[in-house]
Image 1: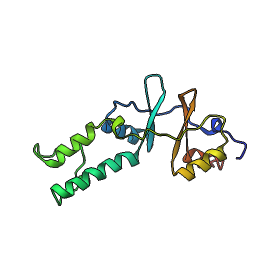
Image 2: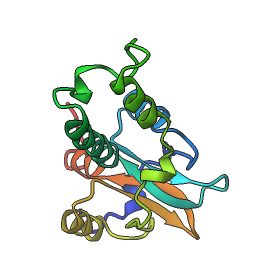
Image 3: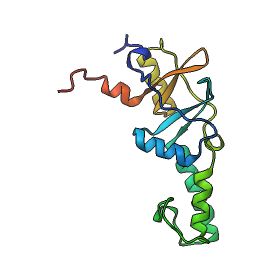
Image 4: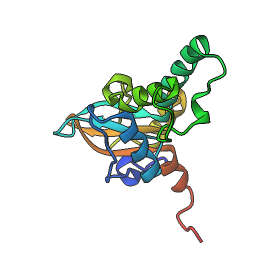
Length: 161
């Protein structure tokens, strides 16, 4: 595996987000595509940031902390954000605020990236050291792929049966 390059394992059909996408749209995309994060790109596919489940959950926790101070006993996750809550419910108001938050407001802007020609072992070392699950693969400022820990794990055994 030491001679393998990122280009050998990376996913080239990258699920991306736009900075003006809402958190609701991003979370639905995560669920439908079975991913836990995605690069945020402009219209020319230039990398602007990355959004992960951690970013969304950190925001949710921030709102829960505020809710605990203002309205003890209410728990964000007790009600799905798309459920029919009472119109005047504080949870409904917070849910709408979270759902309508722009990806650009909570994305991570400083992103560790890699290139297609980086060795898999270099990438793996960086991922583990920086505690990240995925790295956008960038060439000339443009996202050309993504490499995840899962891509590396699945490459351990070529034959799946």
